[in-house]
Amino acid sequence: MTDSLSNSRTRIMDSETENPPPLIRELSENVGDFTVSLHYDQRLYRQDIRGSIAHANMLANQGIITVSEKDDICSGLDAIKGEIESGSFPWREELEDIHMNIERRLYDKIGPSAGKLHTARSRNDQVCLDMRMYLREATEHTITKIGMLQNSL
Image 1 (cartoon, rainbow, N blue to C red):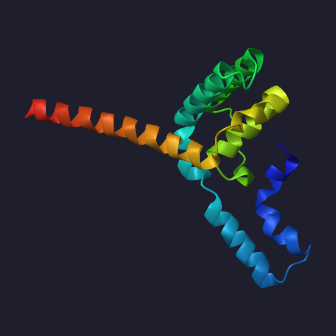
Image 2: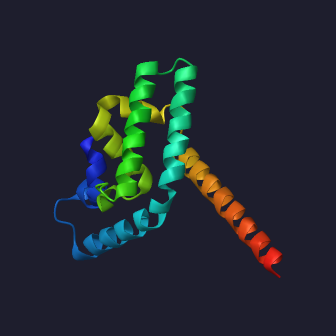
């Protein structure tokens, strides 16, 4: 992981010039605001962490990462879950989404081993898994509530 992750909102401006024209600066800020999904996807933290732990286990089972690296990743993710649930997690809007916030925090906690969690998994894979798990849980909850309503009638 590089420090360029923390500067993701300024990439458009920095790629061309240090002092872009006002229209480009405004467009860049608007695009940055549009791409930030953190306020929405914070609710996916449980699914993101569970999916990442399962992925780390698979990587270790396949011999892609060591058991020690897997243990570090899983312990770090458990600690991050605790921080989120206690309200002490340091959310960083410039990192744009839940995935980058968790990844960056994991890197801060365990170092370069955190970067191995992306092996054999794209961001799209991660997003799809998180959404599928979230929707499955929400659907099960809704079905339970409907059953309770039916029983009360």
